[in-house]
Amino acid sequence: MTTPDTQAATPVVEMRGITITFPGVKALDGVDLRLFPGEVHSLMGENGAGKSTLIKALTGVYQIDGGTMTVDGVEHRFSGPDEAQNAGISTVYQEVNLCANLSVAENVMLGHEPRTGPFISWRKMRRQAAENLARLHVDIDPASRLSAHSIAVQQLCAIARATVRDAKVLILDEPTSSLQKAEVDELFQVIRELRDAGVAILFVSHFLDQVYEISDRLTILRNGRLVGEHLAAELPRRDLIGLMIGREGAALDAIERGAQQAFAGEREGVTPTIEAVGLGRHGRIEPFDLAVQPGEIVGLAGLLGSGRTEAVRLLCGADRPEEGTLRLGGEDIRISDPLVGLRNGIAFSSEDRKREGIIGDLTVRENIALAVQTVRGVWRPVPRKELDELVDRYITALDIRPANPNQLVKNLSGGNQQKVLLARWLATAPKLLILDEPTRGIDIGAKTDIQKLVAELAADGMSVVFISSEFEEVLRVSHRIDVLRDRRIVESLTNGPDVDQDTILEAIATKEVA
Image (cartoon, rainbow, N blue to C red; front, side, top):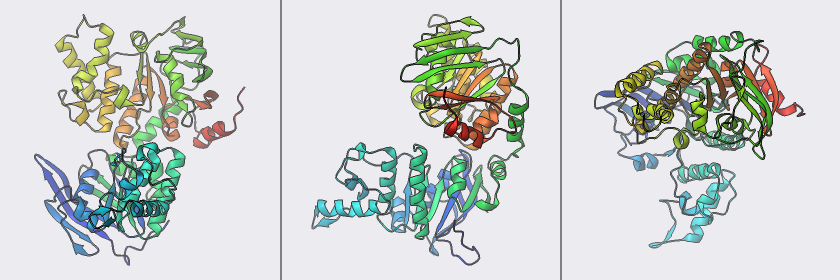
């Protein structure tokens, strides 16, 4: 990892005292940012901290109200992204903004097509696109349709387009959000090569492991203000979290201590809230046993495709088991669909909150009310006063921002959308709450709030099944961890000081399946 001496190196971009004001809101208040050539610089902060606004100020999408911005020592005020790109600043956004119906070459060379007179030279365009892709180790037919390729390849095509002009600065906004581990590794190899070639990389991600793996330097924002600039190697992760959310790491430590101390294994004579015995579905999940007691958080850990989601879908009725027995409160039960599960006190929050969770064109109030009204049935509407009290209670309890029940959910941040979804299920007062990736793609502040809420719900007696791709998170909140591999539960671990990420990885890699 290369980190230039800032006393000797000259930043390729330097933003000083950047201020942007929207009606009634100061989005940025005197923010500084320096980007050095040959360095990966991560921009950190919660949703709403000002990261996107600062990027848009740098790329000319927003005009700044105060402050200065220099590129290679020359002061600029870009009127739009084209001017920023002409100055060597290119951006690749989280949602790949390419034309999937066009060819790879057309996407890579869009706006820079080689011409012979007024006509595009298609052969030369395909050759130049292939050359640009080869720099990123992408070997695909430039004449093929972009939609025929994976999201990871499309992301690399977007980077290739951003570097058609010799970029001095490459901004990557959540580039790994849709990628698997192997694809992230490939992307990071490309980022390192661009860095070593002297490009300044501005990296934005919610994944702290990735931030520390790839970053040389960090700039932290909170509530539109600069908190500080730090070398990644000199800033411990807990300190970074504290700077981002304005709270010490003690909040996370308290959650972790609770998971390791409050529920030390099974309690004799206590009837599990739910118990699966030999439950399975051919081709989806091998028969498994799972019991969750009142007040217990059971984490499911495993790699992508290990069967975590498939297992919990059998518990809540989203899928029907083909074998085995399910018991609720000690009594055998058949749950034919999620509504039956909900009416029996089982709430399932899907990992895909956009397609299977929130309804963006409905308000916060309407989204929270959905499950309660569904349980009651169409002929028994929830009285308006009761609904208002319910909605206000959970907006306050989950700190949903803005605290406006009439706000359309699609206009909320990802973290607040997830809180609305949690409020919907909690409003039904479930006995068992199943959370599948409840903190994916949300900022560290909202993530901490949700982890704390899960711990509090368990302390009040609720049973929880918690799925996360982040082993650190599973370890933090869970009393027991069931490890899955190849659609089987291969190990059950009682959480404690001697259980860590390596313990889970070892179970995934080496544990024999009976």
